Image (cartoon, rainbow, N blue to C red):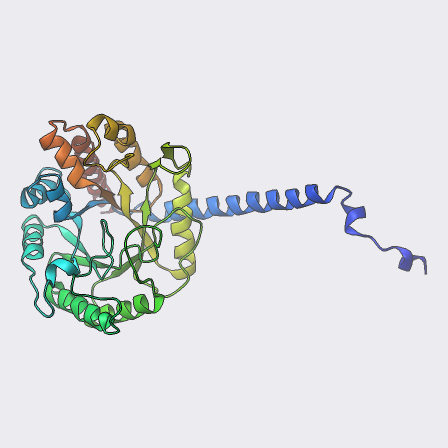
Length: 364
């Protein structure tokens, strides 16, 4: 039987050197993956296109003070002058429980009171890891060598939830900000089991408010592990100072649809949406921002780049965008007599509000 002698091999079917075959397969995979990702991104953008656009920010009183600003005046300006109606507030463990079992909520109370005055919705950061350096904010009396440090943390989180769960301004919690970001901050514990347990506890203490868990980088990946929160958050940084290799400003070349693909892929696999909980809207300069000149700061982020950044954020299709750096905008406006970046945000908020009003009118 002559056909038995015919044994086609891959080399005969594809008579190219091995390296060319490997390169072709890799290239085909990259093209296919990019095409699928782009398709998912366009699906996600179209699906959420008719939803209101929420423009918010994160406010940290300590950071405002570091610029010589009055925190109350700054927060009121955010609500009154900028017209923002969404803010993420922090509940640093080291400030609220400075002595074991003794809680002082006065600093956070006035922030919630101001939010209620202006009808602002609050996303409350809770847990050990929260926005701004050093990322983890444990009190001085806490020792991670103590086996009982975790129950002490849970008791503290419960006190925060019980304090604000019935407050009219509260809209969501953000649990353990950028929990798995091991390369940034001064954190000593990244145990996923703790995060899962904290999530279950928060949902037990307050089953009515959504809980957000955030990722924090530009890597491809889908949030398939536990916990499975009500929403995911992602941070988007575009222009940073590269202090290791190039010693110059570096602009991430990722297109906006990259983030739409991450959000869309996550939604298809988990049913959960994603928000931008940090869109870089302050400089990332070669040295500390407080030491850099305004000229140097503007090399990283000025009014034009800020406007482009906000447009970039909107192009991701995500409909909640919290801008990062409001304390800096206010410092530039009040201490440097330059309202340019402040006015860009003010216009963006006004544009979003106008578009939302039109959207509401068209739906009637």
